[in-house]
Length: 400
Image 1 (cartoon, rainbow, N blue to C red):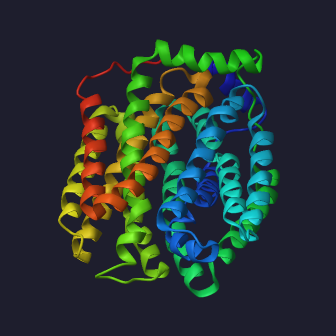
Image 2 (tube, rainbow, N blue to C red; image 1 turned 90 degrees about the vertical axis):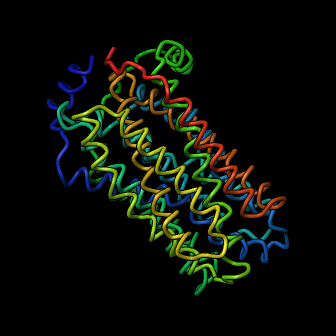
């Protein structure tokens, strides 16, 4: 089936090249940033809406819930409908609801806007299967890694950008800028993004039912999904609560300084192409375990660094490198399972990861409220250890 899809791509001139890979990477970075702009701005928004820390943390959580819902109900259509049209549809929605967030004057308006921003910002999870389909077998992991590096830079630099803009121009300016960026992206992608023929001819109902079938039939997919759940949960535990630590004693930083931690973490994105290349040559499981070890070490270091800027910086670097290596390797493993179902496989894996992220944000906020930074780091370590246990058993990685 994969050969048929690739044949269609070649017949229409739709093959991957460096410029297209770069465009996909930039798109992934700019769109996924929509989900994370709010994190350094939570305390500013709390002041605007007159709510407490626990209430405002719902904004970060509900955005990830929306992203998970978009993954679950829209992204599988990438196997059934033409991906370019679906991507443009989602970009338009993201532009609208980023604008709605910028103009929000009430807490619940912001909650609704945040949910829908997440829902319409799952564009990267349509682009990644497209890149995997257009890429040659021998370099698929490397190309997916390059596209993913854009997504990872977007995740991390979004905090830096939003923190700086929020500190100098207000949090609303961040969302207005994000809405404008979505409009520009829509224009560029409508012009440059190739069409990508679908591979599934059944109904939407049968498409959705196949998610359960794939999960049941593919143990490596289940392993990757649970690993993603706990790893991204730990990632969200840290990033959702870091703002509360850094804006209090002994640091008293403003949102621009908090956002700089995202810039520090971008070194993790440098590991993405290397992890993809490793998956092409050595297989993904070794890198997954290495990433888990790095992330666990990060939480151990940060657990003793509530008042140490150096310790926190080392922890951020280790956590982001560990997270990215694990994520890229997991995704390479998943894409190799059934080429004709890559959008659905990606849906299962990423939905599980962002479900973990949503729960991690929620539990992280609770841990901060009751046990402060010690509770946060212990909870993060528990999530990482859970991922390690899941990966004690080696699963066969074969294309079926």
